[in-house]
Each structure stands twice: as C-alpha cells, then as structure tokens.
Length: 125
Image 1 (cartoon, one colour):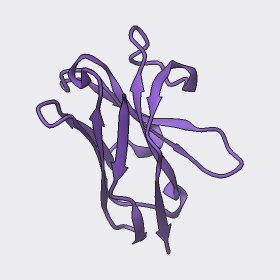
Image 2 (tube, rainbow, N blue to C red):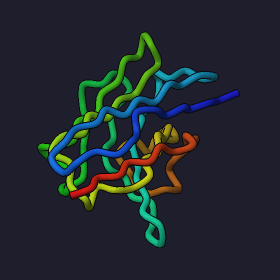
Image 3 (spheres, one colour):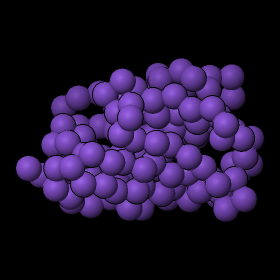
Image 4 (cartoon, rainbow, N blue to C red):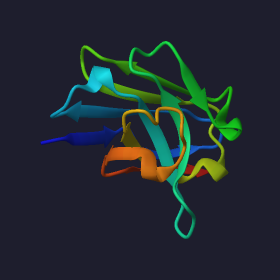
C-alpha cells in the first residue's frame, strides 16, 4: 500500500535550518508531482512548495521564496524540503503530499491523493 513517511522535523532557533525528508513507497513516485504542505492549529492546511515529476520545475509560496527549496531523488523515492532562515511564523506541522494526476500546480488540499503523517517544526526566538 501507499506510504509517505516524513522525518527531519524538530525545534530550531530563529535563523536556523532544517531539512525535511519524505520517503515514499507503494506507487510510482517518479510519475507524480509532489508537494509540502503545512498547518497551524486552527488554520487551514496550506501548500508550501510543489515539484514536478522529474524535479526540474518547482513553485513555492511567496512567504518561503528564497528560504525554502523543494527537491526530490526519484531513484531513492525521497522528497526533500530544505528550510533556511527559519522564522517563528514557520512553526507548523509539515506534511508530505502526493498530488493527483492533472493537478500538479494546484495548491488545493483536495488535489492531494496521499498524505504523510506530518512532522512538527518549531522555531523559537
């Protein structure tokens, strides 16, 4: 069955860095767009960054541009999110997501086929 397992979350001081990883199994990882979402309690889950199947095109939301970078290793079936210059407002639970076919660049939660379990990121000042 499909599984997405995130790792790499934790607590870090403002200005620090973290790299999230998401290991996929149970489907053709290299055929689908992947994304990272994040959610703060009481708020809607929002897309942070999306990457196309072969990894040569990616988009991210304005609030993380220049600080976060999404990438993937299709041979290893791993999705990454490198997060630099972290701010307290980045504190959230981050989710790995496999996008439905035909909805690659949509940021809507409804366009996600599979979710990871989430990994917590806390940025303290």
